[in-house]
Amino acid sequence: MSQPGLREVEHEITVSAPAAAVYRLIAEVENWPRIFPPTIYVDHLERAGDTERIRIWATANGEAKNWTSRRVLDPAGLRIEFRQEVSTPPVAAMGGTWIIEPQGADTSRIRLLHDYRAVDDDPDGLRWIDEAVDRNSRSELSALKTNVELAHAAEEVTFSFEDSIRIDGPAKDAYDFINEANLWQERLPHVASVRLDEEVPGLQTLEMETRAKDGSTHLTKSYRVCLEGRKIAYKQVTLPALMTLHTGYWTFTEDADGTTASSQHTVVLNTANITRILGPQAGVAEAREYVRTALSTNSRATLGHAKAHAEAR
Image (cartoon, rainbow, N blue to C red; front, side, top):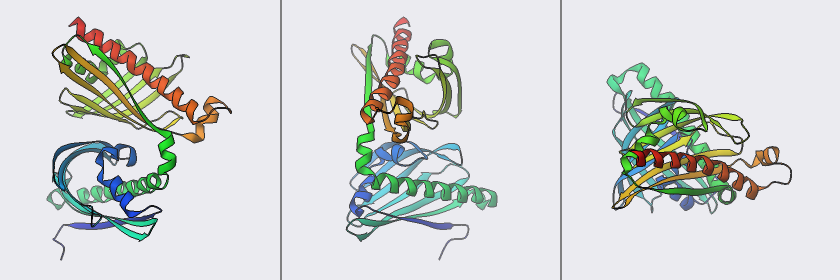
């Protein structure tokens, strides 16, 4: 029997993939930012056997939120239970279960169960949660279906790379340069304009207009998660025509001789736009090179300015 004020809902979808493969995709939270559209970043806090604590940053109804959850993994039963430890208003409590049911050798049914309450059982808050859970659940299941069913193709068009630089100075000064993106218009020549909002400490919304080599400009929007001077993870939510996904992170590692600052990118190419952007003879290889060059050019420039800033201090 349900508790008063407790809402229980279920969403499901059928995918053309083995149940074990689907389970692994959901269990490996490191992949969530590229698999699930609402997810910005996930960080492991604790792991012990089949139990883990994770911190999740994601959007809900266009707003960036974060929370910590406990998960219990059941590989044999193809189930994953989750429960938020401390929820963000208007959510008072939130939990649920992923259940993967084999429907044959190459077909599975994914069931996503949620139970939740609103703060003070407020009807408006409950309505907000209803909409967010429904929207995110449908989005997550649809994206999961796409990623599982196109796994082979995605391997060709998904790639990651990293640029690094050594800095003769403390990690904090380099971190501060990347964290203070509101000053990038003054500090970085390729940034034409910038707007940074940080209503919750460490969770930023960054809108930026950047200049390309040909003089053109394009506007991007990203959500950024800033982790205590060691890492800034981000997910770009407005994308150039050649990408369907762009996530990444900046890391800062200090040692006795200085600091290594790195910029990592993960990209999924939009194959439908390759010939329109790069010409009829272009393919995936040319698109990978073009995107990597463009992103690396800006990353290396930003790392170079961060180096100069840190060493000058």
